[in-house]
Image 1 (cartoon, rainbow, N blue to C red):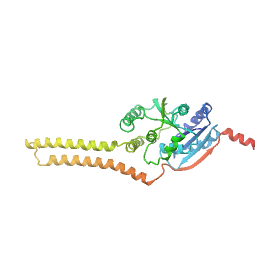
Image 2 (cartoon, helix red, strand yellow; image 1 turned 120 degrees about the horizontal axis):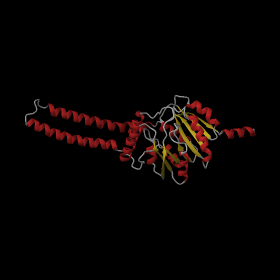
Image 3 (cartoon, rainbow, N blue to C red; image 1 turned 180 degrees about the vertical axis):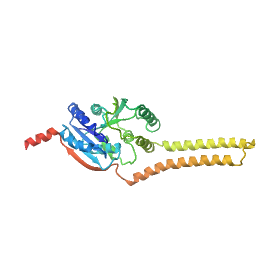
Image 4 (tube, rainbow, N blue to C red; image 1 turned 90 degrees about the horizontal axis):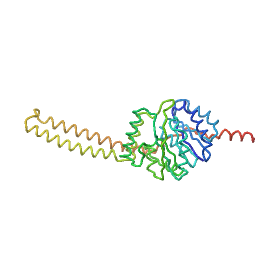
Length: 319
């Protein structure tokens, strides 16, 4: 069986078309299809719509509702844990990722890969969003995980074995993409055209992107500590140079108020360096504290297993 995990948040307008496209894709796959929809505390009518539409579909499905909005990565993790297929793919509900890419995912897994990576070849996103994405993934490859594709990761699929390992990792404030590359295994990738968002708005806000960048840096790299060390060295060098300049100015009689300039330089440099160091170390300490709590990444409020419409009709006739 193949499984498709679909995290849902503010996707009420795109869900009907998405379900129709998945239904049309089902007969093209080599194995039966299961769709796992995870409603991540969406404030619109996505859950009610799925509860009505999923029983009409020709594929098996599960409908999960989380107790609140935990974020897309927690929703994907919940879907991965619930999926029953031997091959499991992620599919965005906003229709920017073509549904046909799922077929390619499953073909790559059938060909021997344990993890299949999807990258955007073109993008309908605004210029600023595209530029910031390229910058982020460039820095990610340079400083965090070197084997991540240059264009980043927008979608993925994996085998049941990889899924079992991913959902068993209890890390808080981590990233699914980081864990996906950390576990290793055999990987294959392909590029697909990313379409403009047809309707609705994205829940992937700037604040969440910044949070994701910090989680990535702290969870998979010693970059913040390196920055702190380099910053400290640069600060010391700058302080020495500034001290020599101040000393020369004092010897030449260019300093009117005795002690003012070196005192201000010492205070500013030492305060800034201390604040930076405390903030970076505090970031690690906070994440350690979060992991010691042992809280789950998500809470499933309800789960429904839905049989294909044709199977229910056949079962009714036999009665």
